[in-house]
Image (cartoon, rainbow, N blue to C red; front, side):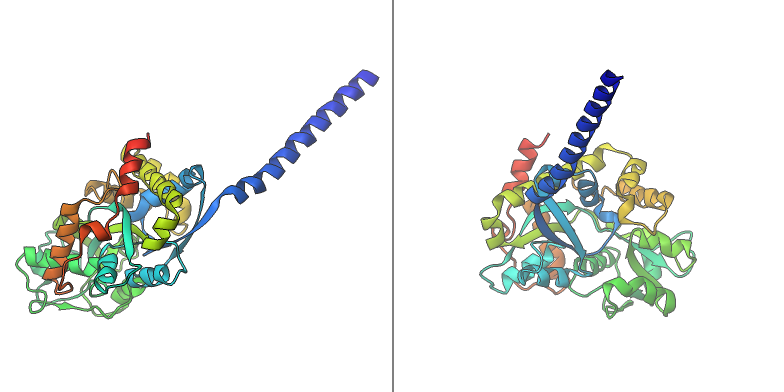
Amino acid sequence: MKKYIIIILAIVIVAIGITSYILLRKPQEAAQLKTIQVNEVTRSVFYAPQYVAISQGYFKEEGLNIELTTGQGADKVMTAVLAGQSDIGFAGPEASIYIYNEGKEDYAQVFAQMTQKDGSFLVSKEKTDNFSWQDLKGKTVIPGRKGGVPYMTFEYVLKKNGINPQKDLNLDDSIKFDLMAGAFAGGDAEYVTLFEPTASMTQLAGKGYVVASVGEASGEIPYTAYFAKKSYIQNNEDVIQGFTNAIYKGEKYVKEHTAKEIAETIKDFFPDTDIEMLEASIKSYMDIDAWKTDPILKEESFNLLQTVMKEAGELEKEADYNKVVNNTYAQKAVKEVK
């Protein structure tokens, strides 16, 4: 009897020891992670590699804890970064070009690219079986904020299809980014450009119909990338490298997995979207090859963006690629991350 009591006591002591070790270790592990404030331009399935990197623990593998906020506009994201409220911004590279051209000494540098196509879809009030870009003539479209990549890329597509953005239609740029879907549903505009899953949710609600992919029509363009102040990058090289490594792992994941697998991985970031719609939204982006396979922002892509900006009348002087873009960390990630 005494033997059994000793065995039971031993088991209890071991169990208590293991439990104590786990409980004590978790706060220690959390304390060892460096918290980074990241400001994303909007919450969209378009940024699936980022959410994959968070949910799969890729940032934690690099010693980083991500606190994610949503700025609702590239201008707001950049303002937060420059003010020191956010460490890293995630928006269109045009924001960094604007800041560099203003002559700021501590300007923002782009260090990792994620998307290579426009992520918006054109949504129509009326169901259209055989949509043509010519259908937009004489209509009102809500395309986002003037000067932002979504607006400029949309103008670029219009011009490619022989439509004059100033004369042939009305582009209503008065609506804030996060209010575009609501303004479209309750207003007089015949078309709006929306990201997923908002585009599909608008269609499901019977408020509109997805008729075209702006990204498919525009072709490759450096659409969304990560940036930070030059001083922050210089003073936190380990953080920037670890962050870029994690993003690259996320890019590799979406390349190697199905839409269904990706949907299951990122579903917690979209609690109001059912899994089938999430999967369909991801498939839409996979179909147009929206995501980069590595985080390197190439010079020819950067130059194309500046061409689009000039054609939109938003850029008088081209920025120096080697000043605005810092590929050091992306190149190292590609070499070292397996």
